[in-house]
Image (cartoon, rainbow, N blue to C red; front, side, top):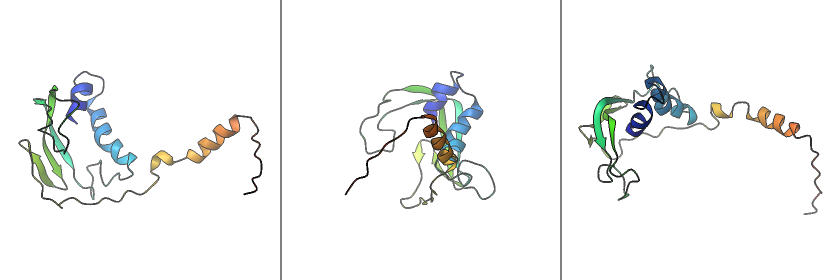
Length: 142
C-alpha cells in the first residue's frame, strides 16, 4: 500500500480519495465482499490503516513477512508509510511489528459473480450479433 502512495499519490497521479477507493473499496467490490470489507459502516469489519504521509520506508526482503528471501523492490526508499493497521477492531500492525496470533484470521466467504459480471451476457450477445458472420458447425457423430 505504501508503494501505491509513494508512486501514485506523491507524484499527483491520483488523489487521496482515489487511493482509498483503489486500495479498499474497489478491491472489496471486485472480490464481492463489499460492504463487509472496504467500508467503514455499521456491521463492517472495521479494517483501517493509519498512513503517515511524511514517514519514509525502505523495502527489504527481511522486513516483509514472506517465505521468499528476495524482493523485486529490494532497497526501494519511499515516502508514505503504513504505521498502524487495525483489523476487526484490533491493532495488528504497529511499530513495524506484526502482532497477531496464528489462527486468529477469519474466513470470509466470497459469493461468486459480483457486480463486474452484471450484464455480461447482454454484452456478449450484442458483440456476437454484431459480427454479422454466420457460423456453420458440422454435427459430430461422437
